[in-house]
Image (cartoon, rainbow over all chains, first blue to last red; front, side, top):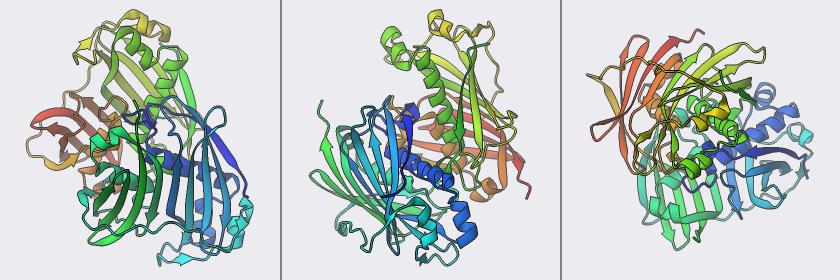
Length: 244
Length: 244
């Protein structure tokens, strides 16, 4: 259990793709913005954590379960709950409801703390999570192992100025942009994601070039993002065909 | 004069760049989303215009005057007023105020109507603009002629899946992404735009490759976006140095 914070959002033109579905990078960015607003309300803003503890929050995983994708014109409620933490991770749930309070989607995000100078992960000080009333759990949350790609298709991308966020790192949402774009327009226009497992391994540097690679096995695609041969992110996406 | 609609917005992490300034593509997208919400309130949504008149709104120009760029954490008010129209264009102003109602920035956007099948511009039917109480003006709004580039620097970009909006066209905000990215990170990190004139000439096709080119003359940069030798957009940006 943790303190719940929620906001209502009407999905405008700017948030939706060519299928009228919400753009997932935008949805994830919005969710992170919303979680930022909860941390501010609880006097636990990123700035304060940096000033007081010399630490920054980083995201290591997103687990998306997409029963129904929010679409253009929908008014959705996004509820967030920092539901648990252990020595190394905080877990936050974003639940998306339609206007009848039926659940449409869920995103579980794993956060860790990092020293911005040494780039090393730090243990989570209890006083940083106490205001959120999250439960302490001993166990780490398990996520499926994502296989190494053997014969992937790939495309090369340059990091762009506006891909960077306030920390000078590539915005987390951007990875999904690369992960999507490497697939064919034809496939993307005929399929919707139902589940996405996304793991961030290593930051992408601001002036870098990355390779987005993927393999497809029926309705499952497995992805990675590499740069100079190093693994920066991995993902698995389960798809369903769009019925006309 | 036209009916005014406004919303308050707190600029979160997801809206800001590495300088903590608002990301202009995001700000423009947000403004267009906001104008969409006004049109819906007045029962004049894009969908209705398409259903009743078989026409879609397109944007031909943005004129941005940026006295002070909104920044991370700012609570701004965006006020929009569809202030005038003539036979071919509707003009909408977005004014951005800080919390003390001091003006920070202004965006004037030129809209035209297009038949989605023939791609031809249509005259503006009076009943489409009447609900906005905009003034009829005979004159077209003049914008400065943007010079042809003679010895530009350039970068090539592929259109990505998430660059497309609901119409299957490249989202208007995306052009500024290409226009910015072609410049050096060093220049961008030390300068802020104070005025931007952006003209859209021709749509970019979903599967296309574009070239973003620019020339610099002191604190003025002149830009274009071309594809297969055709001109798709042009821009002029006036910059100022950031004082430490």
